[in-house]
Length: 355
Image (cartoon, rainbow, N blue to C red; front, top):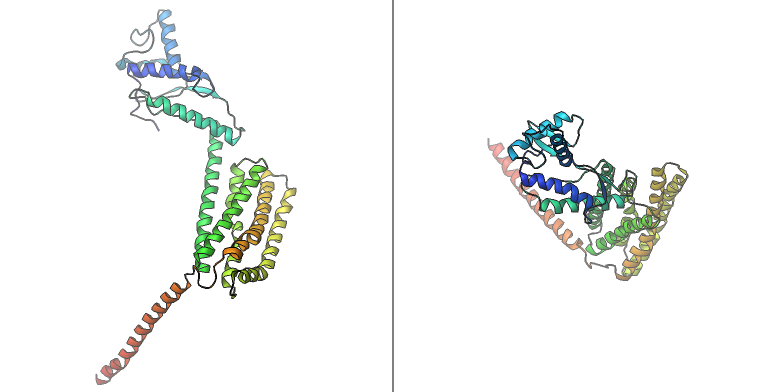
């Protein structure tokens, strides 16, 4: 969309735009790039060449800057003599877009980190330049077709991170409702977060870059990291034992075998994917195997040791008494209303009989 408030017709704006092209190409603080196209500099050269050839343009101007009232007609005249030129866009006789082109040091297949650093460098440079720009030409920005795929990768990664946050929030709520114990809920949430961090840290240690495919895999497999810890948390809370050690042992005895069997069957499906030639299936299988491995290890050797050492017992940190009291009060209200309804029935019958 054209910015109709953008107006480079003033002499100060014309000089600044010319200086911007030169500064971006030569200033040591500017991003590394090769200057391959500056529209106003090309227009300035056109004015100089036309004046030297005895064919003055734009009301006799020999170079930029031209008078403000002659700038936009001059741009139209320049574009009419260079119909192929792609660096300027006009709208109803006014210059509304100016594109300075540079050859950047990134490509479509550059790493995520390299593209991210280049984009940050350019955006920082443009912010600095915009702060010193005169009125009318502020609001310049950097864009490149080579960063579109990177932007998609970034969106997928952000989606994966948001999914992690949402999963932890859902785990917290579900465990709290299932156990009615905030301490057990905190232990379970920390355990699930540990699984996710272990998986992400392992793939980064393997040399993977968090990109588009990895973001999809994480977003899909986040739910699998919660199952085993949730089962163990519910088993610990429902264990009818007097001490935390016995409750942890009972949870392990009742839920350990089925949880381990579930982990092995799911892990085996991930191992099958190691024979795939498609990168996505191979990465999906790898993350699936790591998720199952860390989930079972965390539930058995992190969550249960936590409950064995400092798990709640009896009514410690439990919301069950409050829930019981609330249900009791609700039941009493319901019973009272029922009694009132029953008490009203004979009177109604008597009235009908008298009628």
